[in-house]
Image (cartoon, rainbow, N blue to C red; front, side):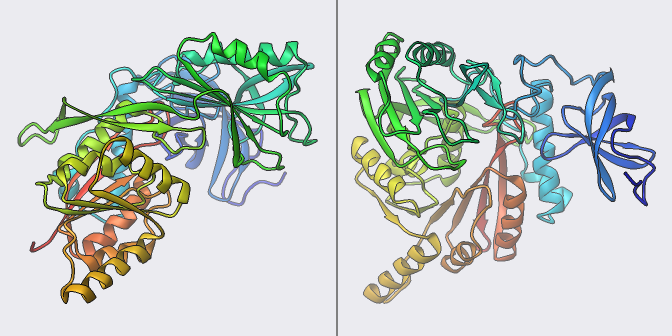
Amino acid sequence: MQKSSTTMFNKDDIVTVRIDDIGSSGEGIGKADGFTLFIKDALIGDVVKAKIMKVKKNFAYARLLEIQTPSPDRTQPVCPIARQCGGCQIQQMDYSAQLRWKEELVRNDLLRIGGFDEETIRRVLHPVIGMEEPYHYRNKAQFPVGSKNGKPITGFYAGRTHYIIPATSCPISAPVCSRIMEAVLGFMEENKVSAYDEETGKGIVRHVLIRNGIYSGQVMVCLVINAKHLPAADDLVRRLAQIEGMASVSINVNTRRTNVIMGTETSVLWGEENIKDSLHILDVEYPAEDQAECPVFSHTGQQVTFGISPLSFYQVNPKQTEKIYSLVRHFAALTGREIVWDLYCGVGTISQFLASDAGRIYGVEVIPQAIENARENVRRNGITNAEYQVGKAEEVLPTYVEKITSETGSRPVVDVVIVDPPRKGCDEQCLNTILEVQPEKLIYVSCDPATLSRDLKILTEGGYEIKTVQPVDNFPHTVHIETIVLLQKLNS
């Protein structure tokens, strides 16, 4: 291999590097003779020996071989396969250091991408709200199924591959997963039910989906299969029904040669079609005049109940989700008269947190099944002042404005708009629509600080001021961070 014109390093060279930064994907960043290296599993403060795997013009990727001097933030991962698995990128980082790093991630994106000045960021940005116990927080787990030495295995994909690392449990998922996976593997082995092979497209069991209610205690298991029927299904039901809390066993048919996990056809083998769980509505109190403190949460006694099917969208960390939605409610500060629009509303979880305090709530979502779930959930919770529409926010909201204007002769008042877009952020037309409608308050819930910062720049240039930026660690031990931002219309 020829050497790069800008570096003396080649593929397979061994280098010693001090790590000075961490990238947005959790990889350590250091320099060797001024040349930048990205090294997975390395932390700021580590001195490591690494092997160069791929050389680019201005940087290279390297594999961690040895930690010569550990970072003061380094800790022993709880999970024995944390380094191989692609799920937790920073489990080797002490949890308090994870929270500090995620706050810096939000701060740097606001500075670089949003173009906000240091003083503004210092004034509005609060520390990340973490978890007291950052393990076993996920209420959903998906285990791919394969085979090794003629026997079925389950586990997790190695990072950026479809190679299965054998495992039956996960320290960020519910403890019940271990018993379920052992039952499924025993069923497959004794009944000669084959695992799906991605290369040939043959075999039956592709994935095992597990969902559990943290308050209800109900458990759901769904096997994704490459067939119309599951052989010996009665034996699977018999084994799973013995597990405490088991409420639903189903199969989902996916016979396509695709990386998409779930198919569209689901049938119940035993128990209920849905399990149920609740989210508690919390009161939020910020310490006065102290940006260095996280808010204090307390129970209101209110809760919202949701039905959860194998295909339902439902936040995977309910404990932190309660805080996120309660923060939205706190920032909205509704008095019972306001018109609220919940854009990218999903199954209506945020709007149902606000319903008891709002005059009227309108939810918009492009996925028809999510809107059906939202309507079912408002019926389940006895909510009468929320309605949901299928469509794009940038189309539905202007149509509403035009309709009310033509009927009344004046533009309708929209008091609060809430957006909770996917990782790619808000559609540009959606942002333009919000700026045309001019709500008094805008609350942005984001799962990506980079696209959030990009959109905040547009919104502040359009006449809004950022009042509060509150990150919440919804996914401990991963590089992901949720952020809630309150914006107020200027001159309101």
